[in-house]
Length: 395
Image 1 (cartoon, rainbow, N blue to C red):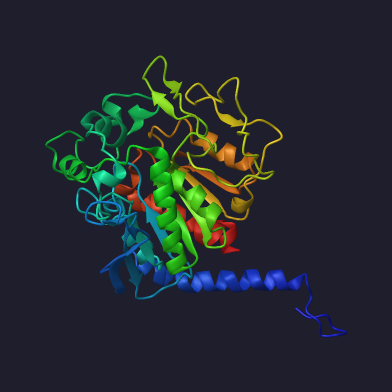
Image 2: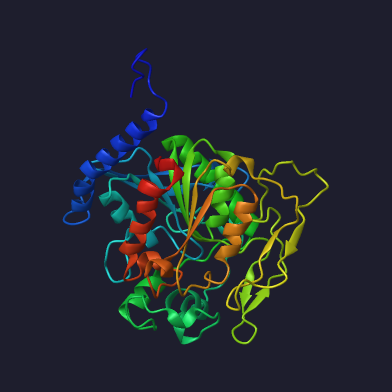
């Protein structure tokens, strides 16, 4: 480690020594971490709190509005410095991460067993975060067929090319089945306005990070559109983003129509490319100017969509440029045709992205709700292995 002549540190030897120390530490902790994946879940503390929001005297009764419910679990043996904040997707609540419809543990417990503190939220105006119709507007009606086609049993009415591969949801995926009914009982409609969803949840999640400090952000589906502006607002507090099939694809959502016209662009254009509220680009956009987008002339494969991206020269996302991002996509989800577009859009804007297709790791048959499916722990292990060994944050 030292030069012989002057006892100065050898700059070539220090990185090697650092790597050896990290390897030794990981080998030392690995048996304990793996042992914690079995047996009773041992916690140092578990409770809940609310963040964000304000009392609004302009509304009858002066309700508290904009607040977010947060529950947390702190393991007895805390092995990692940064907690994981888990943010559910559309029509869901934090129960996605705290259990499964057939009574198994979900990702919150698995992460805790691996030595992480975990914070699980209910989005603003969802679940245990109170909803006020006079504040947030009317809710859309329940859609049983949507839940069946997108979340539970896409293989029964395939609306995208990969849907027939789905086989991991517990139970038979039909109403009356105990697992289906448990999952359907958990569904709660989202606020109808996309910009309102994103602004309210961005602000509440920023308040959460301001309270707990630096953290890893795990988003799913709809909440993927919240993750980018949260990281944009607090780049020093977001240490990594685990984007599980994040809201996408960029620029235009996709309407799944089934064969032969599998994909159709929705009319609405996302103002930031990634969502419906502004985020910081460099060079900055003048007030009277919008981002310019172009669409690929052909898809990379027939079962994929044609991606939208920025017109070159592309503007950068400077506040996300140092935050490692892992995008996780399952084999049979409706995201399988287009999460590549999200990864490519972020890469073009200078964001460090790793995109994992679970099928490439021989994790097969999953749909969009992979955190409650039969092999959910194998998927959680992929994310944690990346955090602990493969991500820039771990080096």
